[in-house]
Length: 174
Image (cartoon, rainbow, N blue to C red):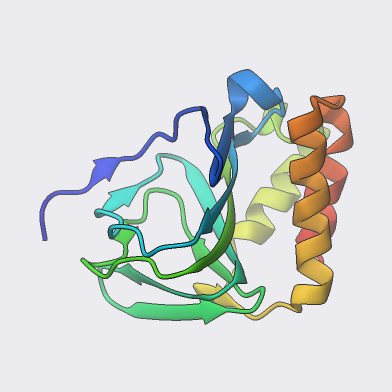
């Protein structure tokens, strides 16, 4: 394995990919909110990590294979792949097949400014995130997909950023 890079998504809008970063969505604690539709296989993701960020990748359609340094994980149908802060992950030279993905990154480095929550609630939520026991969380696509789609739609519309964190909090209760 080559050395991993500290991956920083950049603002991108194309016909098949939209990536919003802090400068566009203005939601404290959310580093990236993104969506991609793959109509053709795309190259593998190189080994990378996200400094101080949880990354949640949701397979809205299709089946995806992600890897950590120690294991491989296949997820689909609304399942969520969780990479923990600073954890090296990628697709281990496996291209990403047809499908649809949403992903978002939560930066846990500042409890004073996290999803518009007060410090005590932010601390509690971050501690709960650290207790997620598995890399793949089985989720019901019929519950997860509408929440993500709504959060993403609000972001695209440039809605008040305070409207989006409650949707994210609902996502964590599923």
